[in-house]
Length: 578
Image (cartoon, rainbow, N blue to C red):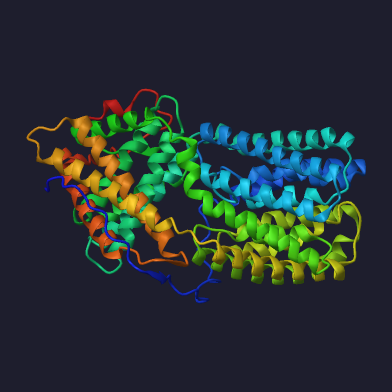
């Protein structure tokens, strides 16, 4: 317990260079996503019918416009279906809006410098909006690819409505493809998010809170739990039996975060395995006080969303980086006489991550993946030129491969993305493979070099300020929770609200600290203060959980009563008693 004391801003330390830009581990392969097959199959199902229809009509030259809508199927697979419906609709509208601006610009001018400038501004807007809305992978890259490529396709004003119509129809089909699994497994995304939180909690519980790597496991556990709560909150509407059961499982994950030594990791992993299957949701016996947790969830649903300014203001440096880097990359490609400057523009647009260190990693991955990808294209081109059907089928196979591999490392997915982008240029007419390969290599190197230099030049000097703000918010949230703990009988809802606010503040602090640590020239970061704030915050969280009586007792688990069915109409989580 500690009393609330006013915090005086620390004096600004001198500037120093951030961590070194290393090569070790940049190309290392990781584990694939749990749902890698969902975007891979969805994009094939969304792309195939429009492209095959155009093939039958002999109009593959229109495939770029249907691809604009079809590629929207890559988005939203981690969201609950109600939230996914809204997010996908916005992605389709954003894709079609960017395409419309590009087509209009292409119809009004053929000046390459003007077109590159328009493409750079579009990429900056797309990057900013995607980051602000946290739409998730593949982010702005697909949007920028479509709009930038469309800028350099001959266009007339009279054909724009038809081309936009094709994109809208394909986008509507992609929306249906992505929503269809909800008919069979309506709570699939929420179950996966809860399973990931339980697995992360099990990993932290296995450290008992003291073993090597426990701090990293604790941060990963807190982030996974926070993401799972956000998934349940994003579902909207009135919670049903299944979602109430998932909420109770998340309470157990939070208990593991607060009291790892009192938690059985094997039980958490077993619940996670059950959630990933198609059976019933595991049922847990929760203490009576756990009802306060669900009251806190209901209160959080009623919170107003953050204003657009709060979302966009921190992203201003990234927007400037993207606009400047994309424009300079396109201008450099034009100066070198490369025939497709939009490839350099898109390469630069794909690099920009949360900080310079991550941008460096992406630059290396992009160059390696593209160079290997042009070799794959050289091998595939003779086969694709045999017949238009072979061209369409090759693109479908590469679409699947890109989404199947990109989760392991970005460069590996780019090995499939690069030949696919090269083959798409041949939908209108067959081209010289050697010329395409030469242009692609030149644009890749120019885009990566110029784009990264722009990231270094446009330093995010406000990263340190945001870290100070995140530290202050976490310290105040901890003091609020500690003040309630000191009260003889704090109101359950107030204590729950304070605990959830502290958990969210700690997650935000870790994300902000990681982003700031990877920036280039900036003042020294208060690393010791971050560590101390996280440590005291997690201790306060543990005290709050114990005060609420959420730490389970072995007798809470009734043998033979481990599951509560999704399809059991006669039983609800309200029927569960301690």
